[in-house]
Amino acid sequence: MQNEGTIRLSIFLGVLLAMACWELAAPRRALSQSKWRRWGSNLAIVVLDTLVVRVMFPVLAVAAAVWAGQKGWGLFNLLQLPGWLEVAAAAVLLDMVVYWQHRLFHVIPLFWRMHRMHHADMDFDVTTALRFHPFEIILSMAIKLLAVLILGPAAMAVLIFEVLLNGTAMFNHGNVRLAPDLDRWLRLLVVTPDMHRVHHSIEAREYNSNFGFNLPWWDRLFGSYQDQPGAGHAGMQIGLRAYSGRICANLIWMLVLPFKSLQMGPGPEPRGNENDQG
Image 1 (cartoon, rainbow, N blue to C red):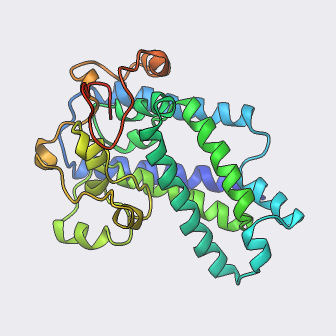
Image 2: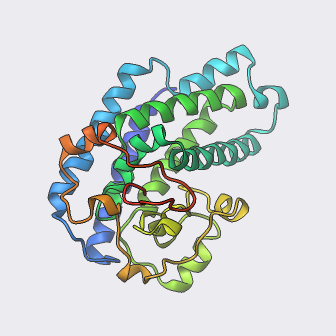
């Protein structure tokens, strides 16, 4: 699709800048670590992830949708829905795939080795949304490509979904303050920062909840929704208990984390020593 890269980069930078300004103007919580050190490492990771994906995958999700359309593969190529309905249905189904992928990354020990780098951030702001290990990005892209080939949505539907997912992920990781009444109504339509922040709590019952990145409905539908953290948003501790008190913003440390010892795999409830969960 022509200008796909320009569209994605422009929206990404625009949302990142808007959220950064909002965080400065109305922060929800005080940060515990150097913001500039964290931002340097978290932004370096997203650059590295982009390079890895470009090298590993000659075909990305939008191009895969074009190819599936040419071959007539996938559910939507069989249904021939109106364009607007296909975009809406594809966005909903792909978002459900992302939800279940996220839950699996908390359950399967091998996947958790990669995903815990995201949870090891001891603060929670817009750059946390970009903090994913390259191995996790590779696996996530493989899952997304498989979902696109099975569903066969239009290329425009995939582009809109990816832009929305990226933008809402930066929004709901924002260290921003929303009025309680606005948050209560907004989280019926989209995952809000207060809703997703619970997922980054150090407490097991809380970090195994609120897996959604974009649409908030899956957590309610599949029984993983938690409204508020037990200690309140000002009092909750962010991160992983195993790394409490450490500086977890070093780029090399972040990259080697999957190779460090895993005391046990994560799960819906702590079993024995929960120090290495999240």
